Length: 397
Image 1: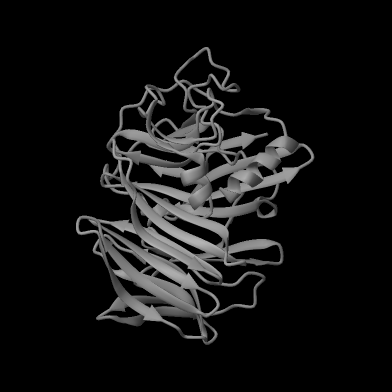
Image 2: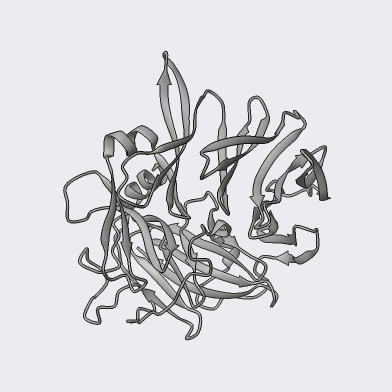
C-alpha cells in the first residue's frame, strides 16, 4: 500500500491526459497455465502484467485502467469493449481505481481495488471476463482489519487460493518494528485466513514468495544480522519445512527462484563475486558467478522465468546481462541497442524497472516525471532478436 500512497500524491500533482492505441477488442483466450501463478511476473516492484497465449494484460503506472496487447494483431489499448466509451471516466469498463495485483486465473481476470461507486475504504477482489466485462466482487477486505492491519504489498492467486503478502510498520513495546505476514484464503465464500508467516522484526526484512505445484516456497531475508532462510509450505497439509538457512556475513543475499521441477535457486554477492547458487542435498552449490564490475549499480541478479538478469548503468548507458540457470549467456550488452519506436528521446534517460520475463523476452517499464506530466511505457524486449523492443502500451498523465 506504500506505493499507492505515493501514487495518490502524484495523482494530485498531474492530471490525466489520455491513452494511446485504444481499440475495441473481442477476446477468446485461456491462460498459459490456467490455475498456476505466473511467477515470472511476481517481481516485487509494484508493476502488474499477466500473459496468455494471445494477449498481455496489465495496469498502467498509476494503476487506474486495465490495458491489453494483442500478440497476433499487434494492437493495444484500454481493456474496454464499449465503442462509445472515451476511457477517461469511472464509468469505463476498464477503470479499476488504483487497481493492482492482476491475476489471470482459470480464464478470468482478477484484481484488487476499491469500489469507485462506493464511499467505503474497503478493498475488494474483483473478477471479470477477459474482455473486462461481467465484473463482480469475489471478496471484501475490511479496511481496518485487513488493509491497515497487514498493509498488503502483493496479492497472488494460485490453485484455488488467494495469497496476501503484507509488510506493516508498527510500534511494539514502544519500539518501531515491522510486521511481515503471508496469508492465504480460498477463492470460495470463505472468510477465514490461514496464516503461513507472521513475523515481527526490528531489522530490514524481506520475503520473496514463489508458487509451484501444491507448495508455496519463500525466502526470508534479513540484513541486520545478514541471514536468510528458505522455506516450503505445503498447501494441502498446511505445514512448513525449512529447506536451508544461511548467516554468512560476507554475503549479500539477492533474489530467489523455484523451477517447475521445484529446484531452488538463490542469487547474491560473495567475496567480490556475483553468484547464482542452487539448493542441492540441503546445501547451496555455486552454479556460476561473475566478477562484480565497477558500475554505478550493484550487479546482484534478479531471478525470474528461469533467468538470471544483471543490470548496470555506465556513462549514462544501461547495460544488461541475461543467462539461463545453467549459466549459458542469452544476451549481454546494451539494454537498448537500438531506438525504441514509439518512445521519444533516449530510452536510457528514463527511469525503469524490470517487470519479469522468460527465455524468450524481458518485460520492462520506462517512465518519466516532468512538469508536463507522467509518461510510462510497458515494453517487451525479444531475447531471440537482439532485444528488439515492442511497446505493449503507454500512459500519459
